[in-house]
Length: 531
Image 1 (tube, rainbow, N blue to C red):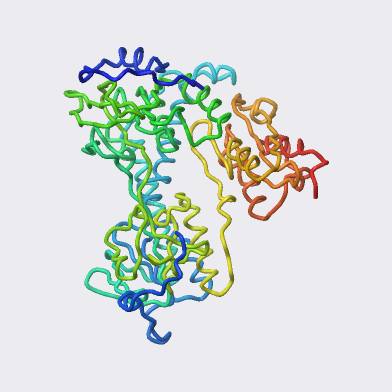
Image 2 (tube, rainbow, N blue to C red; image 1 turned 135 degrees about the vertical axis):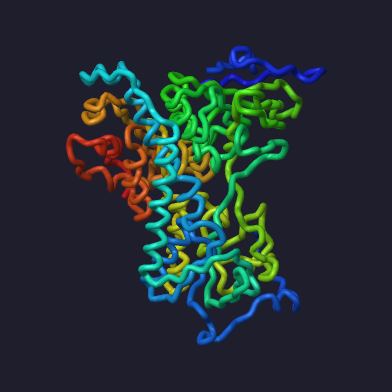
């Protein structure tokens, strides 16, 4: 992984636009390949919440937002015998199903097939020869839309089949037990906020949805630009770089941090650069911000991107590309909920909650009957985390104290090959060890030693287990390689169950399978770890 830093002098005049070739050669000299208050609430604040006798409620539970988190909560609520309604102001399924993880996996699946079938050297090693591999852009786009439609219908039918009332309209709190939607309203003993998030667009970036766009529009795959700049090298950016390069586009990452893929474990990031960046038509610059982005016209006028030094904010270059994907993260979608009526003061748009997902007022006190899960609370912005939080919240409502261990929630980047993890990076674990006075042990193995990976001729990648040397507490696990997203769950479930590294040492895995990659790591755990 390149560790070059940008050594850019502050320009005396605005830099002139550069061509793709010039940019790749010259830019940056780099390879271009709530504190709890004890003060009593004021009288007018008390008036903002109310309590209704149980027999007056329309529902036991109302959920605002029918995404993956709201859906998971609704299903568990019904299982617990709660009369449940879900309010949706947009489309059933939320971001994940309609504009996120589901359609993006369809694009990755289709483009991944194209990449694989065009890799003549790889196929030749398997004794296969394929000529003239072609694809239809619209057909791939239709696959993504059709999948989203199928999953959306499945979610809708599952809730209807269980007796969940689906109420359509934008929800607004009237008090902590009353919500209005459209020109109607309903009451509930408990209300869950599950409104999700929207793409975050930094200041100075003009979105036109065609040449400058977020993931929402990128998923439509309306055209394939020759050269795409991607602002941000996190999961979203990496997955789209996988799609675009497989279908013939060139990609340049624009990253504000000193290193590309800044959220990754350092060792895994180096592997990812070697496997996902180096061999492909991908370039990158780091330590720079895209401070101004102006849309273009496809085939006629390029997109212009003004790059500024991250520290000095001085303009250092201007690049021209065919299109720009803004993948700078997501922001909570909580505007318009009328949170002021229940005395909630959001933090950067997020609804503050305690570990049980109960919403907190501006004084840090629990708001009776109001809960918040998923992206709207900002604890962990993953669809499956939202669902797990919703289930935990339902359990707490029923008097069963359930606190989700967020360190046990896995995550994955569905590139080819995939990257997955649970818990900390090695760097985070060692920093925690230094702070708290314990040693950290790291065990590693390679996919190159795995029979199944060798049979597939896809043996790039590694797995690493990070744990406390004294107790065996699992601090994290990272995997990069074939089907890494499927392999991480043994470690994540172990963390969830409070198992120690030494507890996994004697587990048996079928041979020959990719699961033996994690088996090899577990077997390296020393028998001297304390029990």
